[in-house]
Length: 133
Image (cartoon, rainbow, N blue to C red; front, side):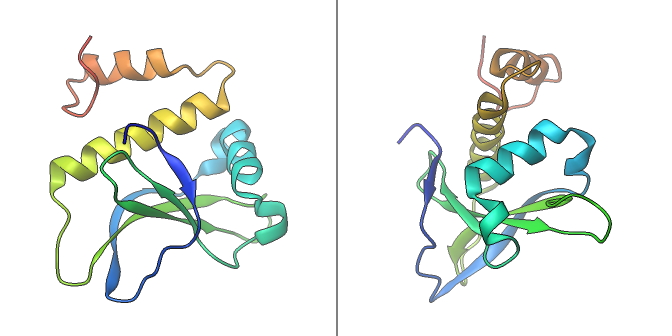
């Protein structure tokens, strides 16, 4: 499995959410907010349920969208890995998955953001999960 895919809510029995990433100011860039609204049908679903994706590792990740009074929805986002209740997710696996998810988001947003620029930034900062170039 090499791509991020939107999935239906997985069976969460015997599972827990393991925190992976938070962005509390999605509204800094309206293009990011618009991407989430469009991709996950948030105009219709709102805060009702998290959205879920499957990462290249096979793990599911929950996108929990945050709303704040007076700000366009969503104003924030948390991403959590869906893991077995008593098992941790290995750190490098989560790092690679989050990098893939961020690349997927940037590719879906388009405009001034490019996956190539994101990868190059990762290489400049020596982010281990960034693709080698």
